[in-house]
Picture (cartoon, rainbow, N blue to C red):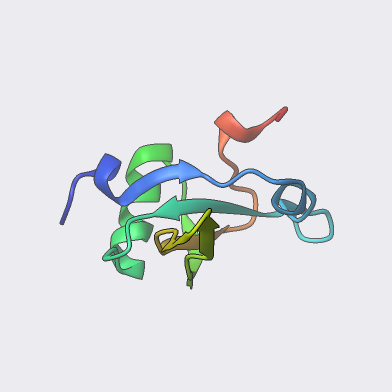
Length: 100
């Protein structure tokens, strides 16, 4: 397995992810992270559990395809990146995200 800092790149904090972070009905927390493109769901789950000391219920991933960009006469492409939706077990939460 790779090191934790090689798997988890950064938390992906937007208005949408913050709005959907807590489900008040059943006290389930969801977090979104940018992760390495070659990271598997098992690697991501192990890295989250080890880094934040929580129990992960599920991991859903998707790959965001890079957009085509133009700079004057040249066309280019932004890189692809992978996003992971982490659902924690009921009652679990990551303390670093509280109050954000």
